[in-house]
Length: 269
Image (cartoon, rainbow, N blue to C red; front, side, top):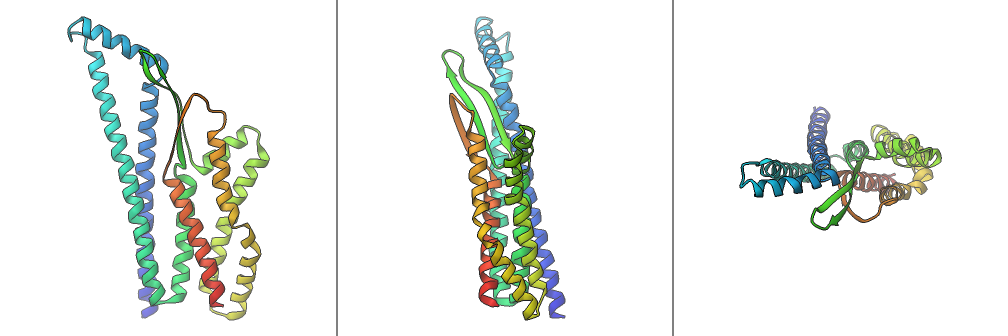
């Protein structure tokens, strides 16, 4: 009876985690879509046209009001983008809060289920780290009279970045990032999850030994983020504005949970 209740609680916790993580991902994606629209409206041609519209509106004493309408729409887009961004961060906080509270609860309630929760949560964090926007990069320049003009806006997830690197014929780099950011982390989390369901000492010991063998690659997870940051920031000029998105936080969450799970079961066995 107690085991059944714990399983039900575990399912409830995972459902809450997925709900908050998905909500954060959805809001972040909406933020990115609006930012793309804003960037498109702030291109060189569009900015010049807006300047002419502003001049014509002043000359016509407001009869020609295209500039005012466009400005009103631009402000609305900025407000919506800010709202989506704040909601994505808020949902991410709810996700991390849920993770922390229930990890502490399971730690004192049942150590075996604590390991299962650790492993499954690390998988959830990894999944959303792979599909969520990792960061955004805006290339712009202030042009006299015209104002700030956006020349480029990019936002990529880890998976999209791997695809783009592969399409640019950097096959080895794409494979290494796929290996260190997807295959090895997922395999490691599944191995740790398997340990949570195995109570026998001998099998558990073998799993721990295997985790130790691949433990030397754990810092590769962090290295992957550094490689992606370099990839995003290369071939950019003029002024560059780089901003981290929730994908970074989910990836950090995965790394910390994975490391903690490995350390915990190493002391346990």
